[in-house]
Image (cartoon, rainbow, N blue to C red; front, side, top):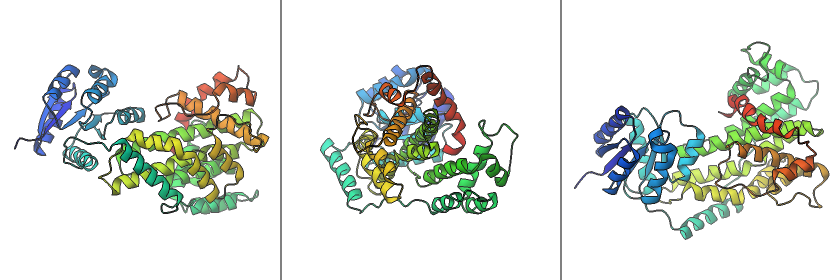
Length: 420
């Protein structure tokens, strides 16, 4: 019986040869291609898996990947590259790639990639047979039903967050009392210390102890950082594809929340910090459903869904589960309304009071600015009022609109310490 074939498409001859050598050691016939035409020519002769560097200039910024997916839709594809951005990962997943591997390749990383491909295809690096649309829809319906009937439980709010909120509700609380709570969660403490040394807060010299960070930042900022870090800690992913999507998702949500707080201050909302938290939570249904899908993928490797189908399910149902989370966590009616209705065609419903409408428009502007900067992960824009309508409802002047658009990249860099 002939060996299964693995093609390594990479213009870097040394890197391609090394990956092919490792594939040979693992029992496959490793071949290399240093250009797009050469890769397509070799694929015409057959291959069982393809390793491709989509960032290589000779491959025209991912065009080769798109051609492979169109001409050979059943061949498993693994992306292998250096300095891959989350945007590259999302692009690869949308084009049907099954896995992501950092360069330089090692025997362990190549072996792990092949095992993950094998799990998802149900055969050791053979032709994948995707689930028929009806089967995919059935699996999604089953998952949604299990969440609704309670057999998949909604997560609890982290206990440290409840304790911190109680402490911070006391306006005369001492830094020492805040420290006692924060020290119970080293991950949150580390995020607070990192934020205290960002460009926004660190202009007065670098600090290295948590007490100084608490003093510098103040209780309201501490609360926001703790909320962000605690929520981030609720979601972890073993599968690289899901981990990459969540990373992009979480960064976008954090940037949107920070931007929403600035918009709230711009329109003189009475509590910008509450707007920040509502914005951070209003898409939490996406994070929860992504975690559920990831867990099912791990347990039921025989079920094959594309990432686009998973994202489609998130897109269509996340508002329902986001609202359910807000209710379970006792966040209040305003949180629940914004989570449930932020993709409505209009926010002018009689059951919304003036502040709820304002927060919905703030979240809409922030989300759309984030998407415009490439931090979104859906193939198409989500429903809701256009950004101009929300700006008008908020009475933001034309002269201020460019300022908020420019803030997205600045905030993205500034929140990097608490989004990793």
